[in-house]
Image (cartoon, rainbow, N blue to C red; front, side, top):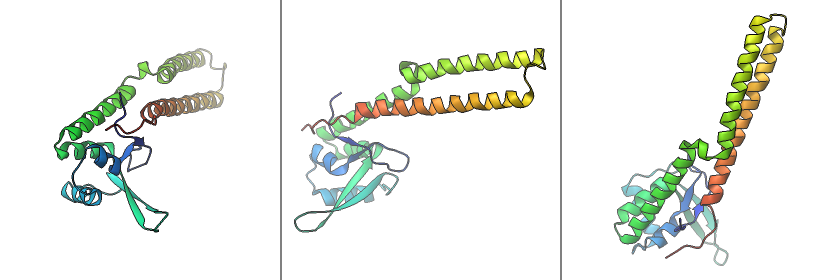
Length: 187
């Protein structure tokens, strides 16, 4: 998959993937001036700040003017690409759809992700161990007291949750590493 527009890691609402609207504007070759284009599109399609986009203001070095950079969610970028109604817009839209599909595959097919697959296997093994402990406790009441059993169960659950969090973080890192490769903007 070729990178058409560089993805950024700016948090917008609940999403962490975004693109710079200026780069999208350049790629889809809109004939409108950028600042007018983005403000008209936001107003016309009712996009909302901190949900669909964020604005980051920076000072230009030479004349100390303020530059507004709009970072937009992938869904907003996909919609803007679609409404541009030209070949570059369609190409960008298809690319955003491809990224979303690859992301969904990573989430929905944990067996393809070794971190999550191993976690699921360990989870099954832990459940079996818990069942054996429960059976032994019922069979031999003096084998382990209830308080000690509860402590062991809490430790097992804590370990399981920590491993799940770690696996999800590693899977997310693997995906973002794949998506955020710095490749030049293709025209």
